[in-house]
Image (cartoon, rainbow, N blue to C red):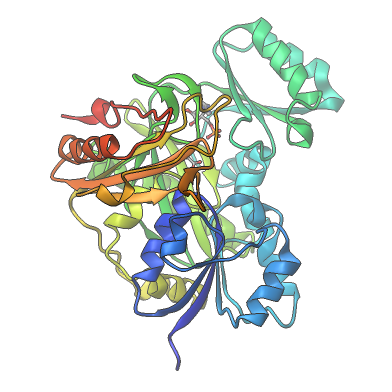
Length: 428
Ligand code: AMP
Ligand code: GLY
């Protein structure tokens, strides 16, 4: 049987550059298309100007270019049902989609649904209640009696902005009304009010074929823009893998209480799921709880997880699609990988684009994963808030970070900013 794959990867961030880099290294990848991609992915495959949300155009492209595997990077096409679109179309059905069905992507697409799912399967998570426009008064009464801080979550996708941690009852009431009033569009028409968990967060990833699962290296990301975890939330300023406090005992708890019941729960509820599950976890008094599920890999976590993954990613995806993941053994590089994101000045607020980026070719000892970059006649320029992730290996976090910091000085663009303290909280 022909085991060469012609792959279309959807997305345009650092995560997708890391995927593109890893897929292109596989002897089983005969052609890689990335839609729409960025300046970095164009060095791994062919960028194509397709909107990942235009399923018809994606399907047409797959037929015209004999694509035989679709890998979906971001959540939105999955939440909107790209898997189902391919399944329901006779001509596209034979193309495996790496990513869950719409029914599975709801793990990320609806926080209220995922909370109920966790309750049904006794998966540890923060206590919560949900409210809509129908029971605003009940909601306000509930908030008034809730201890501080109060976590409010817009139910649907809100571009990573839908979680607000309120330090006063007045703020919680205002935020609650604003969410229901449409601050996040329809995403906030249902609001989850959640108990605040105090602890240290980490991210766990599995690839599942719907029957079994394989655990990938874990990671910790750094979401706040400022050093010492201060300032507003971003898409992620850096990440490290492995995470020293996730020891054998913690892994056992995570697998038994969280991963296994999640995969079993999906199977029991007959929800088609062949793709990644990203568990956003928090360790509270030594015990793991789920903060959130995502139906995709993390960004910037992918930029440290895939470099550590020794397996051929096409082989993994093929087994995922065929339902034979049980045969696979995951092999990870023992070294530490750390990544630092160079971002545009002002991010996550307003920032300028189109700044010339220099020094990328001079980087030594780090991998560069592009995110917000574009190629113009003038060369490579900034095209987003998060610009380039610099990933390095080291014997420990400090050593890996040292290399990434050195590389961060080599790459230049006007307004460049990065956090110098990625991983410092974990250094032993
Ligand atoms: P999300 O946008 O869903 O990734 O959530 C953003 C961040 O909000 C998480 O990474 C946590 O830091 C924080 N968060 C969400 N839920 C809780 C909770 N129940 N307790 C404490 N922090 C939370
Ligand atoms: N790094 C967090 C995320 O990808 O959602």
